[in-house]
Picture 1 (cartoon, rainbow, N blue to C red):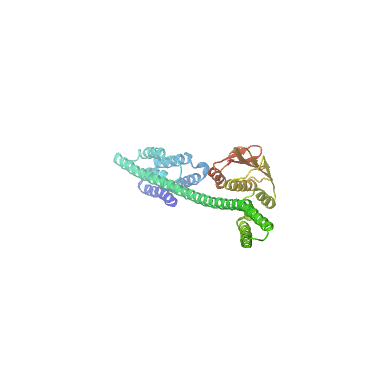
Picture 2 (picture 1 turned 45 degrees about the vertical axis):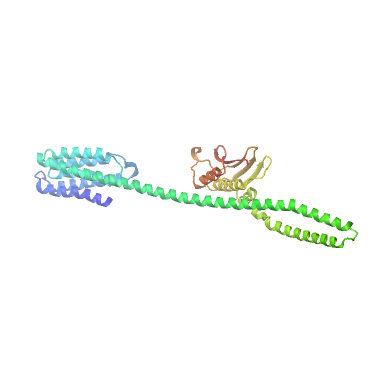
Length: 378
């Protein structure tokens, strides 16, 4: 597209210049005329080079210089050169700049250059042709701009779709972990209930039967046999109960999968930075989903502090307040410019996880940059 526009610009001037040298009697020095025509092409080339740079993209100066040079050359030599003034509008459609004001300036320059040389009919035909060219260029420019906006929207849609897919996968993983930990907690509760309640009752029954056997005088043989059988069955039930409790009770590794102490120990051992953890207040059991949110948010915040903030010291503080649970991850790394944090997928994921369990996320850009997760106590 750009090469076609540039070729059309230069070709318009060259064709008008060659035709004018053949039909105009004002060209007395052909060598000078050719040099001036080449200089005009050089001015056009310089304009294309300047408008390709960022500092000159929106400046109207290159356009005004080129239009003035074309109009002056056409005014002096006449012929078909006034028509070459329209070449000033042949620029790539994606190049910035107001089109209508430039079209008006080029129209005025064309008429000024053609007035001494064109008759009324030829001038009217030139103006009509210029209007058609200007309308065509304006339509092409508008179409290119609309196409660029559609392409930009398409790329943005693709980006949002990837972010949405990532968020969906994160949510599914989060839900799966919540379910897994909830199952582990429920199994642990059942194991404790079986051991503390049913197990103790069975032991008490067995002891009562043992006492009955010991005080019996042996006169009721059949009853004693039945009591012994019950005792044996109770002993077997207790063995089965112990086996069930062992199977139900989750492994220590599974229960500690979302332990903040374990996470801090792993990060401190692999990052090379000083990562510390401390708990404030009287500890109380955490809801499974809250434990996962705290674990994931701490993991993300510490990783961001080490990777982006280049921190050498990170502190994770878990405060057990009466009404809410507050986890603050602070570091001595670089604070974002202006105190405003540009939220990426990691930060957005932290906010989404916290919001799903009814909490909120706060960013503190003070002397030490900190991210605080606040969850309601359940």
